[in-house]
Amino acid sequence: MVKVLLAQPRGFCAGVIRAIDIVDQALDRVGAPVYVRHEIVHNRHVVDTLKAKGAVFVEELNEVPTGAVTIFSAHGVSRTVQADAEARGLPVIDATCPLVSKVHIQGRRYVQAGRTLVLIGHAGHPEVEGTLGQIDGEVHLVGTPEEVESLPLALDAPIAYITQTTLSVDDTRAIIGALTARFSDVTGPDTADICYATQNRQSAVRELCEHADMLLVVGSPNSSNSNRLREIGEEMGKPSFLVADGSQLDPRWLEGVETIGLTAGASAPEELVQSVIAAIRAVTSVTVETLDGLEENVQFRLPPALDRLPQRARVA
Ligand code: SF4
Image 1 (cartoon, rainbow, N blue to C red):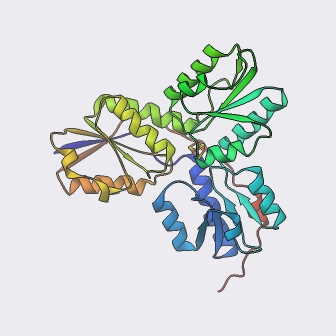
Image 2 (cartoon, helix red, strand yellow; image 1 turned 90 degrees about the vertical axis):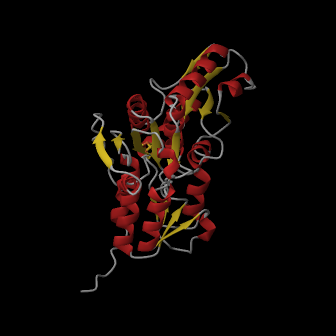
Image 3 (tube, helix red, strand yellow; image 1 turned 90 degrees about the horizontal axis):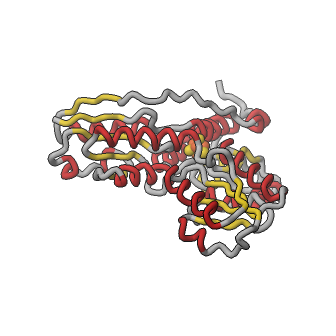
């Protein structure tokens, strides 16, 4: 018999719900196929479900046929991608999370104010690629406090930082600390740009680990915020595993465990959490409880461009 303790909040955030709604509604209006540049959110199950409805996922715009409805993923895109789409006359619906767009705007403001911009984030992540490509001029990317030490900037240079939205709150604090320790004129947003959903899920998982013997995080391997949740479990000294769904549960992980902490990254649907509970139930009897936590009520509006898509003729 084990107890499964669920984190609150967990799973879908407002930006992911909006991005999935955009693809669903575009399909509903114009019919299949609609083209999505990059995985709309980093979750294989979500992508496969939308594929089955007629979404086609591509990595580059040159894979999109002329005139086809094109959706940019929640992670955002560079200005080059936006300009390419415009030059080709593609009808674009931008599913970039409004909290990512906010970081782009903030970065541009700092550059216009004459500051050298430092982006705190992970090289190669699509959100980082998009943010780097949204800001004119040189942007210095750092992912660790050590990288701050090798930044080729004068110690009194006016510097501003912005951050990827799905980083670890603690890692980000350490990098900001390294920046302010090394440089004399550093500014940044009041709180780092770590989004509300990332912060809430990280706080909830810390609390969860106080009460659990091990941690399971439901999420895809390429989901940044899911990986951070698993890392927090490890930092808290608990065996911690990232699983895409119940099929990846290894029964050996449960040996000697009384309480399993279970959470999900911001792009992982609740049905996958339930599939993990079902997989545990196949090994042993289970009681399920949810830890007290924050109720989120953030919602983002859908982009007006959706309403401008032609409505397909309905067959009676
Ligand atoms: Fe937006 Fe945060 Fe969700 Fe990313 S994790 S889509 S920034 S709300």
